[in-house]
Structure formats: C-alpha cells, structure tokens
Image 1 (cartoon, one colour):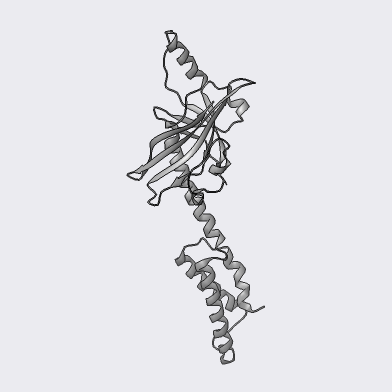
Image 2 (cartoon, one colour; image 1 turned 180 degrees about the vertical axis):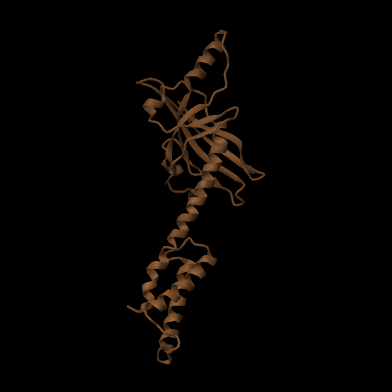
Length: 246
C-alpha cells in the first residue's frame, strides 16, 4: 500500500472540522508523516520520492477534508437541521389546535354547564408525545391530497421535557401513558407528522393526532392539520383544519 493511503483513515474522523482547521491539520499530518518515515529533505537522493509522496498526500488530504469520506454524513446533517426546524414549527403552534380534555378541564366544564361555583385556574396541560415525526402516509385516518414528492419519510426524534408558560401553556412529560393519565392535568398523547414547507420556507403545514383513554373500555381522539407562517423569523399559528374526531 502506498504511504499516502495510510493517511486516509485519520482523515475520515475530521469531516465536521471547519475548513481552516482542516488545512492546518493537513499540514501537520504531512509533516508528521514525513518525519515518521525519516525523510531528510536535505538529501538529494530522496528529493524525487519526497515530492511524489507530498504531492499524493496533499491531493488525498485536500479531497477528503473538503468533501469528507462519504457524502452520507452531509446528508444526515441536513436532515437533522431540517427536523429541528420542523420541531420548532410544531412546538410553537400545536397548542392552538388541541382540545382540552383533562380531568380538571372536564370538572370546570361540568360546573359551568350546571351553573355551579368553581374557580378557573391557569394550568399547564401535560402531554406524552410519540418520539418520531411520522410520514403523512403512516396515519390511518388522514387522507393526504398533496403531491407524493412532498411526502417525507418517518424519522425518529426524541422530544425533550418542555414547559411553556402561555395562556394555553403546555408541558411535555416523559412518562408511560398508564402513569400519566393519573395526573388531572394530563391532556392526552400527541403524535405529529413531518412538516411540509413551501418554497420560500415561510409557510408550513403538518398533521397531528391527540388521543386519550377515558376509561378501560373507551377512548377519545381527534386529528387535525395545522398551518403556520413565519413572522419576523418566528413560526406562528395560522389556522387549524379539523379532519376527524371520535
């Protein structure tokens, strides 16, 4: 194996290093490579070998550092960035599309209907969430009319524990549903689709489902599409389109 090929493995681990750092590292690698093989630049007998080896090494290192060992890493990075924006759209807007079905909400509703005294309190409604953004084709009760080219594949995404203090505030919790339903502020389980953007990336759409067990033998659920728009760099709720409820 030619000597410069031994540098390839070392280069593969630096795909994410900035260009300036890549070039500095490349120079260091070349010098270290020459020293390790005891190449003396002052000896005329080795000049041709040195120039050939350095030329090959520089070519290999430049290609690898600029483009990486595989294009797959760049693709995965882009997917991650896009998913982060999709999650930003969802977390900024979904609270405007949900239905209040927590035990405390039902208690207040019952008191209001029967004209009973009650004190309406601000609360953070709690949700469990599916740790994936699903393809719109993966939902049984949603018939997507968009072009198939716009349909994205399902991708795993671990939602983090989150609290948002707003009039319709929410809290994302990491608990099993069997335990979560014991909390009187638990407002159901949410499952979100991938987010579709327009060409300008200032408008977006996604589908979500909200479900909750009412009793051992019955459950409640609904599905809706949320439309969002970007205003001054912030994703905001635009409108909701109900698709089903049971």
